[in-house]
Amino acid sequence: AKFLEMGKTFQGGNWNHLQAMLDIEAGEEILYVGDHLYADVLRSKRALGWRSCFIMPELPEEMRIFEGQMELRKSIMELRQLRDELSLYADSLRREMQSASFSESRHMEKMIEQIE
Image (cartoon, rainbow, N blue to C red; front, side, top):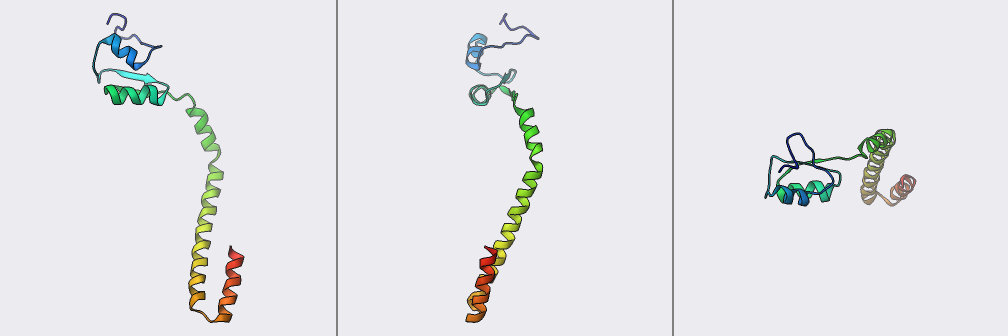
């Protein structure tokens, strides 16, 4: 294909257009670069077996936001851990209450209410 010589880049079309211009069925020799995950990258990889590269211009901003939220994520994980521990403790109190006397059970019920 004269329009696409060594070192030249094809841009502005899509994989279907390029495949027709090259008159090929499939090719591992082609690296298809696109910025739309489904329309460009996945389709060219699945349908044609081409090597694919996904350009994601949003990635630096997404990483900046992700890194900026690390302390919040840490706090959330710690609170979830505490919730799970309290839940296990409340479950153990309920089991004890089932086998305890009435007065002991009432005292444990009050403890559980404070936890929940």
